[in-house]
Image (cartoon, one colour):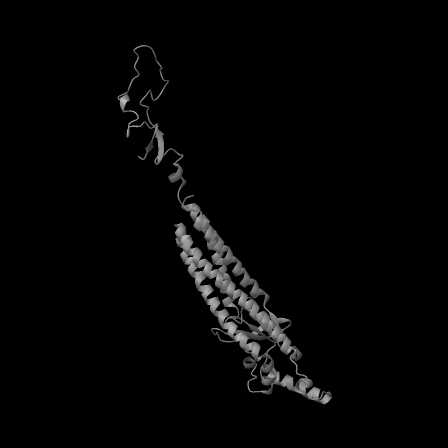
Length: 325
């Protein structure tokens, strides 16, 4: 297999690595542009507050037509006053909010990007230092604290995965020239795959747990949480691409040496460099039939090679010799 075969062997893991990088970039672009409906589909978690409602019994107030009307008016007025939107999408760097427009999501705001971002509903909904804050946070405080800590690790795992994937592509170019380059790329690919898997697992478990806590604590207020299907498809596709690339990098470090077959077996087109060719026998004719003669007094031709030297060290007859020129 020559250099062309080596390049073909490296192309597969290189393309898989590139596909994994694209998946990671899509994750980073989610929620970055409120006007881009395609990118707005990529979010980890969604809070639906369209039908938010507070019942009198939740506030330890007797339920009757008057109190129900007051609470409904108060809830509606509070939602408008606090500018609570119909939904909130949580992405890697920030969150986006918006309203439903004829059954479609209409993003109206995206928060500034922030490293190690985590979604704090009490702060986002402006419930700090309010009675509703105490009502909500006492049920979600412990869950939100755990979510905050896990979100930091998830962000770090993502950044490491992104950087190592880029390094993997750069080092992969050296794999074209030698299997040692493939081995180095395999090591980088292993690190990249580990952090991509760690990121994917953390994101999936983290937001699945948050969704459960969110729904359990806030379902009586008609606030519902759900996961973003498209985001998790991209995340786990990135894991699959990265894992596949690692396997092919490992294969290229064991096989696909890139050495030409002509070096190993000779040129079949006639170039005999590095091969063996037949030489003339010192005991007879090189071409044509051998004329066997016998009888008294017959002595076989020596062709300039004394018979008493045959078999001595350094003078053994070789029917083939190496043709290096």
